[in-house]
Each structure stands twice: as C-alpha cells, then as structure tokens.
Image (cartoon, rainbow, N blue to C red):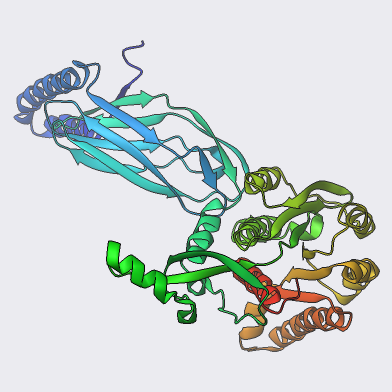
Length: 448
C-alpha cells in the first residue's frame, strides 16, 4: 500500500476511460468497432504501465525546497520562494501545493509549469499576514506528470517550520532607509523647517539628496576631492538634548475594529514601531506603555543599543481586550513612573464626544506634566458614505446620521485643543506618516 500512496490518476486518464466505455457501447450497434476498441484498451493499459514505470523508476526524480524568512512582517507582503529541480531525464509537468499556515485559509495550486530535464526553477510568491503570532508551515507537495500525462506522482517534502509574525518591521526599515537619505517625503512625511538652533555638530558626511546646501563643508570637500575624487561633504548636526518619547497604546475594545484585515491595534503597533525607530534616529529616547482595563507593560524610555529590539518584542505579544479602558490607571502609572517631561503619543479611538469627555479629566492631568498627543481614527466607511450622492430618502437619512458622527470627531479635536492637547485624526492607512509628521513638527517647534 505504501507504493500506491504517492500515485494519483490524471484527468486525461479519466477522459480516456470514459471514451473507451462509450466506444464499447457504440460497438453493440457497430460490431466492427469491437476489435478496434479491444486493441485500443490493450495499448492504453500498456501506456499506463509505461507511464507508471517512468514516474516511479527513480526515487529522487524531483526535488523541492521552500525558503521562508525566520519572521514575517504583519500587514505587509512577505516574499517566499519554492525551488524546484527536475532530476528526470525527460520533461515533466508539475503542480505545486504549498501547505501554508491555516491563518491564510488557502490550499490551492500555487504554480503549474513544465520543467525540462535537469532544469531548476524558483517559484516566488507573497503572503500578507494580518495577525501577530506563530504561523506553522507544513510540507511542500509537488505533483508530477510524465510526457504521457496519464498518471501523477506526488512528492512530499516535509519542511515544517514555525515562523513568528512580528509588527511591521518592513515598514520600519522603509522609513529608516528614507530617513537616512532624507527622502521621507516619498511616503507622505513633510519636510519641516526647524525653528531655532537647538542642535550641535555630530559629524562630517557625504551629501545626499535633500540635505541643506547651507551645511556644505567646503574645506572638507576640497580635502576629499584631492585624495578620493570629488564628493560634497556636509556638516551633520544632532539635537542637543535627548528627549523621552513614549507610545501609549490602548488595547481596549475600541481598538478591535478591523480595517483591511488588520485591527486598529495592529495599525497603532506598526506606527509605534516606526515612530520609536525614527525617535532613536533623532537621538531621542523611545519608550512604551500598553494599557486596557489595567496597565500592561511599561518599557522605560532609552536609546541604548537593543532598545528597538525590546520594543519589538513587547509589541509582538500585545492583544486587544473586550474590557473598557481604565484611564485612571494609566494616569497613575505615568505619574509614578515617568517623572521627566516627555512626549506621550496616545493611540486610542473616540467615537463620540461623550466618550472622550469621560476620559478628559485624566487627559488634562497627563497634559499638565507632559506634552500629550492624542491619536485617534476616522471612520473610513463613513467617509465613503458621505462622499457618495444621496439618490433617495433613505440615503439622505443615512448621510445625515453620518454627518453627525463625522462632526463629533471634529468636535473632539476642537475640545481637546482647548486644553492644549495635541491631536491627530487620521485614517488607518495614513496613521504612520501622519504620526511621524507630527513628531517632526513638534521637534521643529522645539516643543520637546
């Protein structure tokens, strides 16, 4: 029975068998067909046996290997590769089914192709996880058809692997690279002119696109051109003081709302990772605090090596809860553990003015000792409804209700502003760029 496990019948064989059955039926009306059909059956059986012998004469007729990263980036398209090698002496048709983690809900044919003798081919595809956690990959299944195409042989390569899905480190690396080359404007980050001169000299480095030409060091450029060829050199500056920057992430039920497969919490986590990295690049100290019905984890602000890795590990384990958020516990924790004036970026969501007003006393207390930035979300489905024309009475009623909720969001922004609390009202897809923009704006205005 072990021999027959990898043996499968192709569609071509079934159609051939059906054809012979129909010919045998027709032979009752046309007897001259009967001997011809008998000969055809004998030839067919012989070809089937030959097909099986070609497929099974070699134990290593085909080889496959999956290449998967040690960790995947949540919410991003992650590249994976399956390598195929045809070790048969003839051309084969292949079908590849990769046992990807059950979270993706896919078990389809990944790839179909013809492989020439001794040919090696790489199959590249992408997966977009929408939840953090551990994902288990199974075997790589390859179905091989010989040139006759009557039988299939399944090759199964046990390449099980457990892969962790982390917050969006691909997005973080993108912002880091663009920040290093002064090209953050490509992802929607505005170039903001800094007020004042609260910077100090850091180093002389080569000019990159976007650098201020007023910082060109002509003496260093002249020395470099004499020895290593012409290359503009500039004076790079850094902030004089390292400021604490904390991301406060609400894990309550208001952050469970989904958008394009991710929850609002996941968007907040991805944005916090990018913002923390940018803050470290700007020589600030990055910290983290999570909370829901009680305070979760507190990571003190720091900028030593390994701080970003600590932040990523904390963010990896966060989950939303169904409980109401306790802002009193948040305020007590911040007051006890964060003594130095800091920038607090509070990722949360307020749907109504009354919901915000219940928490307003604690927000005002936080803003008294720190620079508080409240970040909450637009209802994108509501925005799509408001942008559409109203063709009938029902649509007018719906649009009127939608206008009321949209007005309340704007009213929240105005009311928080009256108490000196900075705000960002953003759609989930623009959260990261808008948050980085606001952080750079606050630094440029010397507010932190």
